[in-house]
Image (tube, rainbow, N blue to C red):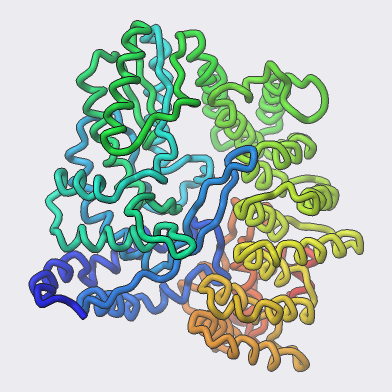
Length: 604
């Protein structure tokens, strides 16, 4: 029940959540951003695109009726180092739409009120940038990140000392009352929208064990919505630095670099920034706060290495010549400075402050030129460097000896190396997108991995379902879902993943009805939606042009030029009696469907 005053704020909500604004928000940002969340959807939320009008109507009805409720979010862990994990949040697409609309409604005003042009964060538009893996950018748009890097590199030439620092556990300690005060002081935003914003954020925060809400802790989501708000929390720091005796200042979210001329000036600005943060119940990260000399700054920021790679990148351009690859490989080996084995030696620049960025940079250029580093180097990173793990998995999938590489990675899983959810998802992505040989040894190892992963939390089960879709026979696949039927029935992401297996069973006389009944027994609307979408594709007489374009487009950022959810949709299409007429060139476009032995066994 709403209070009598709700009728007076309905017009404000109606204006902010108009059908046109919600539709634009989805098409321009949200539908791209949900694809960047950690777990992938079996049909890439294409059913949401198809029924967008009804979703928008439902959202408006809930908000304008005062009955909108945030759906349960999913928590997952991403290891930073030594078992310490960052807690991340998966958000239901509808809630992400609402949050993005609220964030976007204040973004331009917040940007116009920014006290410094040296704060370089800007939200990305959700779209993928050709040639850039967004995972390599900490957050925000790639262009704003590049401008930040360029500004910082200039400090070492201009200042005797550089302060390098960031905020300790920034997101975890953002106080929503402080956030509300800051946003309301900067933007002309109605109280009703602020109320809704804080309501959504509170519902997305982690409150375990029936503990009360604390109004502290910004949820970390792979989207720009919360980052726009978090960025405004540091405007006061920007103002302090702009009005202090500092020569240069640059900030990208909570990473700050400040150029000064004396040690005394460095200490003063560290003190003032920390006190400013304390007024908002935040603190600088003591372990990461450093005062560097000009020489130390050159080493910390890997400036020489950055400029060297930038020159090589310009020379390479769009060309992928073997000569360029050889130059890069020689540079890589020189920078590895190996003492022995696959690990970087003690003198390697990869150990410096920004060493991991340089490591990712050169690996990206190497693989653009189709040049490979030793598999053992990547396996060492997977085992020992959590911050490089995702990058190493991605490039290991291009191995010339993928069977051995896959076996080694699966052995790491058995050893218990992976203590977080994100690593399991990276491992799953590696296995799904690599062309792994079908040997008895590998098949046994894969089934053992599925048995381990399916009991490793909800995200582990999500991974196990997708691995089973590719690598298991129909009986094993159905058994995984049957064993966890109750968990799947009550979980948005698991239910959609389970229903994504249905193309494997189409036209299987002995198995289809049993699996279809299993999906029906879940009594989960999302599972029904995914199953219906895939079954419709297997029965339709003609394919809509937008779907045809999607199915025929290669995914060049993956080793076999195809993304696994597209494989699932194509499998449904190839179960259509008219598939040769509907998609006549599909096997020429996507050679992997028959070249990958496990894809072929799925039904291609």
